[in-house]
View (tube, rainbow, N blue to C red):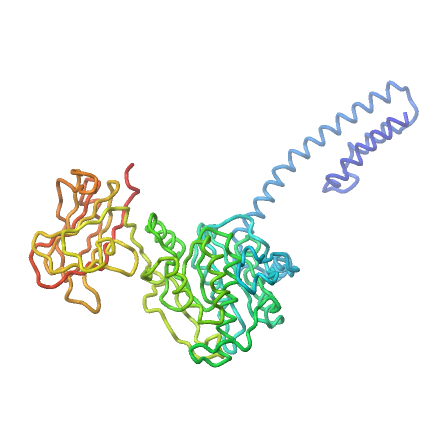
Length: 529
């Protein structure tokens, strides 16, 4: 009988330890208490005791099932609420107590754990050092992203724009875009107290982005840097200026190397930048438009080391290059040489610019720096789709200003010698396309008379001819050029067929040469298979 009592009590204790007392308190667990009393009560027959024990166990099993059934939905609801909080929590709505908790969770003052090995670095001085990264906030990213945004920052004598720059990156991105980006901030100052304070400020303000795995703060200690004193004074720069720009080259090299395997692409920003809305979507569209063409650097700003995009697989080479020539010249000059050495001879820059310089004081001596990119547009970046196509013309082309330059999203154009009536510039799409809008601009600011003075734009269907010489057999005219420009909207309502060709037709001879500055096409749906 004693053995039966021990067994039943074990069941009750196990159950109560797992789920706790009921809301009414310890006296409310009547079934459990009854089971114990039945097994330990006054002596009776063995059969009676065994029957009571079996009855009690059945009751316990029923209670366990009922509580499990009620607990599962509750736990599911709790997990869902926690996920929603972590996904949608915003800076302005985090209570002070919650901010402190999030900060403690996200802040990682770790010992050096990621090294730049000689096999990765490859430069003379880096091969002799074991260069380590300290994680000041965040942890290594759990998965590879589409784009990494790199920032390097040092203490300024006047002003500090780093927090506003990080804020702009996140605020100007949609929730879907945030899933595809990672932001790596390198605090590159040798003042440990400043780095610690700035890391804490970043963590408190952007804790949920750190926890979500989209923001990292790193630092490389001073002992891993090469010599920064007594360097060559190229270009007759003051010694202090040489030290500043040489250290900046090393800062960028360390940052580039760290980011080499985090994503497919990498864009460098400075720490005093404002971003255009949905800049990632614009970048993705540009990359898609360059599919099949070779490029090393795509530029989304004309200022400094802002908005320069690279393939991530090129970052180790660029890091080695900056390390090798760190004392020779400023980083933006080195980048031009790097691009040329990899056989991209010309700048590929896109307008409008996606990033704007917003600082008023330079990180070098706090000097005034009010440079602005006048091609920047914060809200109205409407990049065309320009579906894949073959470009051809019978206009006499001037030098290397080929037909393809007008169709590119870059800052380049087609330039032909004086066209005659009947001459054309043609676009043959790889697949029939439903078009919603077309815009063509001719001439440039410095050559305002090299426009199409008399011309029309037509779209066609029913391709005929060989693969290289294919053209449409029938065309529909959409309108005439005016002042060297043509634009039409709602094309899908005016053209009932999917467009296979588009052509710019010269309707009257002109003595002026012709520049086609840009051809922009927006599609209303994906091309048909």
